[in-house]
Length: 254
Length: 254
Image (cartoon, rainbow over all chains, first blue to last red; front, side, top):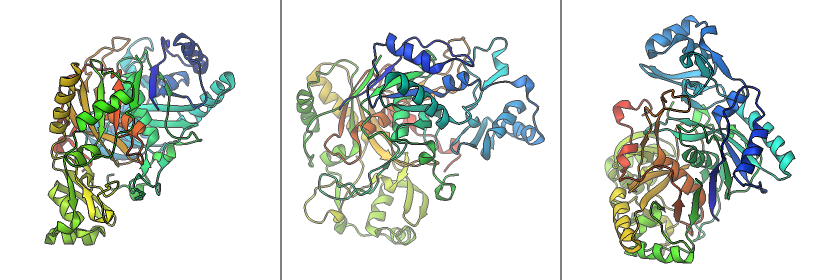
């Protein structure tokens, strides 16, 4: 079965308080897509965060002594570091230009996912930053309920961000919130063509889909922050981000 | 633009010496796909390795003292560990059940990508293992030249494997060889909608496509090891695996 990923057309700039679900329904019409059972919509984190008003004016932030210290080490703005610390449960690496943390939602990323770019928030863009959604699983759930109610079909909602990785160059799309689709698919024990039991078999299907959708979004184009997916090859179920978080005690690379 | 990923129908079991390019051309016909300029074909590593005869009978392998020692630590077959060491340039982690290495091609993965499953090699399947291709960039290049000659259009060829990751659960598809498409896409300095310069902007586009194709292949189904891709959103150029390898001195998680 073919997997298709289609960017929704002409999503407007999102502002705090916007009805993102309603905006997506209009964009689906513009894109000539009628939702079907089993379809998935993938959202860039930025539009969720903006709709939820997760915008902070750095001029309102007072850095703690710890933030000042880490800001010196990392050569970053101490107010930015203060926000990163508030959003994180642990600092993994800090060195000039680099601040890798465990976000309080459990995943490891740079700067707790806080970003300057693309805010359109009026005056000096350097002064405004965007935090990740408060709880991306909940954000995904709420969008799903709204869109399922209007469309009358069962959907999956995935929220993604772009993260750097250990060992490899380049950011890739990665999932940070789920509703209605699996994060991890467990194929352990399924026979292959020779009835020989598979070994590697917990597939990070949610992250594979995140990467696929990220490819279609690109990076520069905030114009395509929502991707429609048809043909996801695994059964839908109610997944959650925590499936994809490796427990610390099993992680050899922290 | 829509990205479509379609598994080629009825690829037969691949054996050493098979003409994989010819087999793919037949499968494209069966799948009613006529290649167009800019299309990409993604291959699971296993079919490349098999066609190239990268199958080893463990009964022919004599483990070195170092392999025996690591086999004790990892509780793995010393002959398997011997092959892993031959295929690797460095051991990163060794503990019960786990052997993470830098493959001699430069990427970090478990067991140097050597796998038992799905061999179909006759007698006891436990005795046969499959190594990664000798040089996946070269394998991709050769397939590309063959398929471009027959089809008369410009193509990209990507060879992928499934790897585990630091920090996150679940394997994801990842690229190990390229021809005719970029691994890394550099968007640094491109303005966004507000003319505000982007910061994170080296996108691991080859790995995003690898993950997308892996999602369509699934894990158990050796029946769909080749995926046709149309709508890759970045310009094609002659890429190589090394673009995606983070230099050791810049890697904080080794």
